[in-house]
Amino acid sequence: MRIGFGEQNAWAVDDDRVSLVRPVVPPRPYLIEAVPRDIVIDLERSALVVVDMQNDFLHDDGWFAEKGVTPGPLREPIPVINKAAKYLRGLGMRIVWLNWGNRPDRLNIPPGLAFAGKREPTERGYGEPGENARGNSLERGSWGASMFAAMEVAPDDLTVDKIRFGGFTGSELDSVLRNIGIHTLILAGINTDRCVFATLMDATFHGYDAILLEDGVATPSPEACTQAVHFLVDKLFGFRIRSDDLLAGHVLSK
Image 1 (cartoon, rainbow, N blue to C red):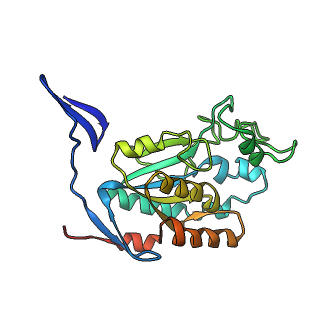
Image 2: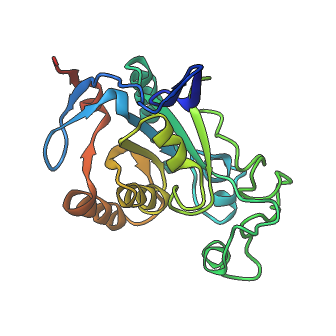
Image 3: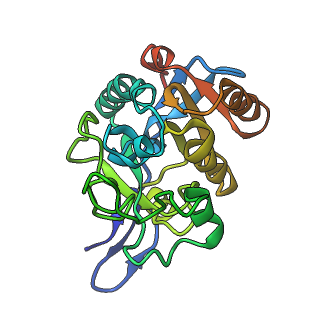
């Protein structure tokens, strides 16, 4: 009998003993041109993590649009993300959609986070209804927290809710990734300098390898913010790749 729900994290149980030896999946090295130097990842132990491609950020009726952010530029990475996800699925890599999903009672939101979402009494904050009758902003299960329709999500993809800018704090992300044997994350989505970068840093704090898909991210912030993220990724946190180089990579012989 097999006990466990992860491909690389399970016990084998028979009548007289329990084997705690985990399944061993042979590595599949894959070479990618990257900055600051080229990298080889293991396709069996890597995942594409796509952050916050949700209605409240990308739709013209969403929370960001109501705050005065023009959603169009934030939608520019969508073709890149969809193409990369389709290609990586074909290589057997796992795709994880990481989305805001706050509690309806908002008890997961501390004052500092609430203030980041609502600076003035007249503004719409987390979990508050908007002018368009689309429900509460970024509330788990709401229209705003749902995936933007243009995102091409496959049935075998994984979806994880998050409750902070960084995707690991208070979420199931770390448990899910460890259960499926993931060591390396390629990060895409929005916003480059907010939830994507926070999740990238958070990943390294939890011991994961972190790679930024730099043409698969976007932000409404000034260009200097993106440049700062690139600088910090290169110097401290990991690597940067472009989608053309990802798709042009190749499996190395063992």
